[in-house]
Length: 238
Image (tube, rainbow, N blue to C red; front, side):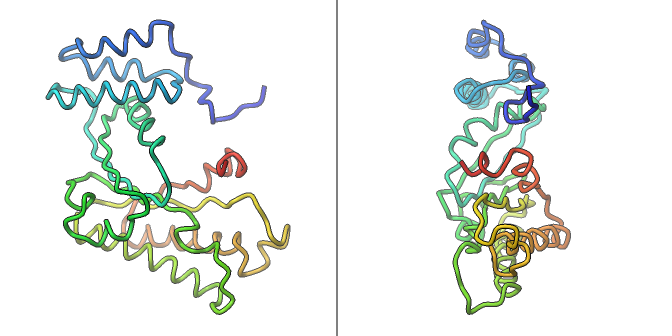
């Protein structure tokens, strides 16, 4: 059997009574946080993850303590639909001792949310903001022979820089930048890396720019490109 991180094989399967234990969280009193973390230690499917996320949210809204889980308010600015991620992330965070509360902006409102002082993200008093954008948000997939590759990459990084600057000025929340995964399709085959204007070459240059921007601005870095490579491009972009 081949090893794949996709199914989180190091986690045990949920016990038969997992659903009952999740429902019992409503009556766990001061021990709800510990119970949530306990039943998050399994390989949960999307339905189970959502059930646990909803239970956690009910406990939070009731004013109950979620100790020993640490509260964390995460903003999410995305250029794609991330509803399924939002459903599953609280359970994954609980497994690591974090009670995450996610504030997500509307689809593809990355720049607007960062630059508008009274936006949902900037007014959210967040602990961090994940800027979850891909190569299409940077317009790297468009064919533009009028611009040299280095200028296209410079424009892409400057667009991201404006988002980081807007968040810093308007909310003060640190940003989490992510590297760009390379789509599996190819135009020039093995020559892609040698053709400066190819998508793969542009993404390679852009990822170096994103790492440099993170170092320059003190942002955190999520190496999405490395994760996509480990999983496989076809599966990542499915």
